[in-house]
Image (cartoon, rainbow, N blue to C red; front, top):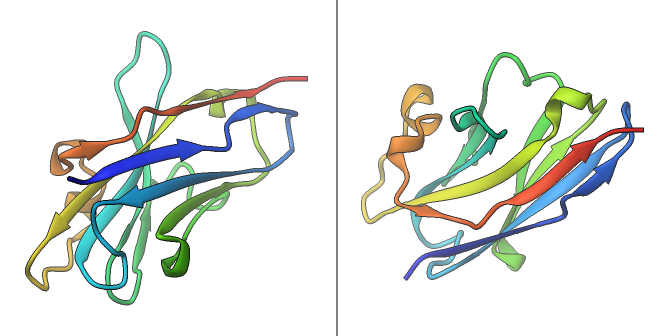
Length: 133
């Protein structure tokens, strides 16, 4: 069973940085084909994609609105995917979720698929980030 657990949220000052973690269990990042996506949601709004990483070479895709400030990476030894957010703004305040899609075959998702929340069957519980002085 695939499980994802986010951590690293909290209070961040405007202009600051944070690094969120998504610990993956149920499959090894270096053995399976997968997409891991990061999404965020604020109360009263739908879930918004921010970026994702694919298996193999670790191709990353980002929403245009965040691509200059958000960076997704992975540590296969720790089976963890990270979301680094720099130059944070109050509008980055949200609950951040990671989501996983594990596959048996060597399919590398296109950008639109990788950033589509409907593509993912496994979700973490979320970690809240508040950007405020």
